[in-house]
Image 1: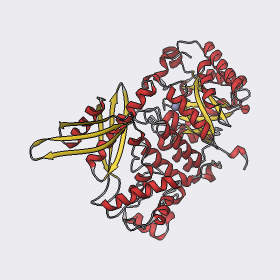
Image 2: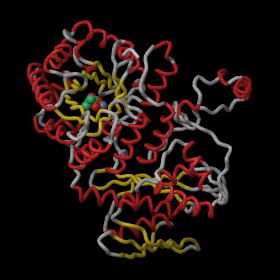
Image 3: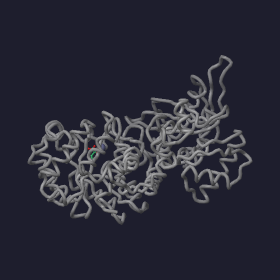
Image 4: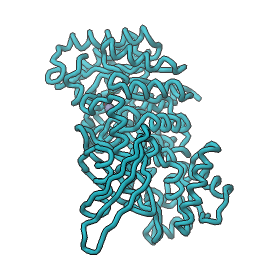
Amino acid sequence: MNTADQVLIFDTTLRDGEQSPGCSMTQPEKLRFARALAELGVDVIEAGFPAASRGDFEAVNAIAREVHGPVICGLARCNRDDIELAAKALRDAPRHRLHVFLATSAIHREHKLNMAKEEIIRIAVEGVTIARGLCEDVEFSPEDASRTELEFLAQVVEAAIDAGATTVNIPDTVGYTVPYEFGELFRYLRKNVRGIERARLSVHCHDDLGMAVANSLTAVVAGARQIECTVNGIGERAGNCSLEEVVMALKTRETFFNLRTNIQTTRLYPTSRLLSNIVGMPIPRNKAIVGENAFAHESGIHQHGMLKHHSTYEIMRPESVGLTRSSLVLGKHSGRHALRERIQQLGFELDEPEFNRVFAEFKALADKKKELFDGDIESLVLRAEGTAMGPWTLVDLQTVAGGGAPARAAAKLRHTDGRVVERGVAGDGPVDAAFKAIEAATGIDATLRKFELRSVSAGEDAQGEAIVYVEYNQRTYRGSSVSTDIVEASARAFLEVVNRIELARTAGARTRDERTGSARIAQAAV
Ligand code: KIV
Ligand code: ZN
């Protein structure tokens, strides 16, 4: 293939996505997701921002060591400490990239950085030079590029390329631009930056006005050859350009764009489900490409057309994004072979020990439920490390409610240090009582912000998924769990949150406000 026709997919789910509220992941979750990204065929994985916290450093380091295939990238501000730390975190990856950034717009220069234009250029050049001294592959991003004076933006980009940047990324940091204007910006840079052909042009869009995908595609038409995006479009505020949407737009309209990516599109659906399960963020039903309704046809006229020929109302086949439908019903008489096949159809590869665990849980669940649907199988497979990530495990939970008396819960928990703690308390209903009993046993007093219950499959005996969001120490934590008993699912989801809080406390993780993100970088030294 002509490399000029190739658009690189740079996935930043683990950096720009993970830093958005309610989307934080543990290290094992990040590793698991990074492996899925490698299978999906992304070209670059931005694994994190190593200077943000020890946890971020370690996660980037683990991904650099263990995930093979894509280039592994780490973000750094334009200062020596950040850049050296990122290089250290990445050193074990055979192919790695340092991504340095500095804001360039007048708004950021005046209100955030208090720096003149000359100083911005000097620091950007210094940052790129330090990075190039440590790594061959260096990306530079002028943050808030879309609100930067064009002439100045061209000067910064030219200086960064002269200093050795091999990729220049143009972020629409606040999701402000519109397609026509953004296309013009890329054309301007290509015309006015001396040496622009020495670097790959990249685009990074946020979705505040719902135009991240459209803006990214316009940039590509105007010469960008790398798109930065996230699975399910997760990211700061309204999110980032959605990977599955931008990739399927390029594929479905290939004759228009005449461009290709390395993405295995049949992995899109399972990867999207995996992320949704890990971060506990349900995918809207009408979400393009991966939403439950994306390939559903309800109206009689549409169904009639579909029966005649699928192309009447379908621009892409569900199988092309990895969505398979099965008429096979699994239940307690199903064997290993049928389960394994269904798991594969859903897009998952399990090793033998993992499969054995899922099979045992499948049998236990099939004893409680007549039929097991795709949602049930997915939740068994995807059951994140969750409550098993410790340090606390739920040994027993008893709840009593009804009859006019206040609900009561008794929870018995075991800590990895050997303690077994039992507490019984009253609450406003059995779920509240269970949460309070867990708080009393663990000594963690968190503020419940949101509690959601949904069914993961069909039928009267459907399993319920509980998702719990709490605030603790100015940080939002999320936990989820699935069970046929919704009080148990709720208690386990709450316990997952408690475990995350404990892990964060022991890892000495910083509060979210100290991490990257436009507003949060305000006080940071460049
Ligand atoms: O949105 C943004 O500007 C960023 C940069 C760090 C690339 O995420
Ligand atoms: Zn961003």
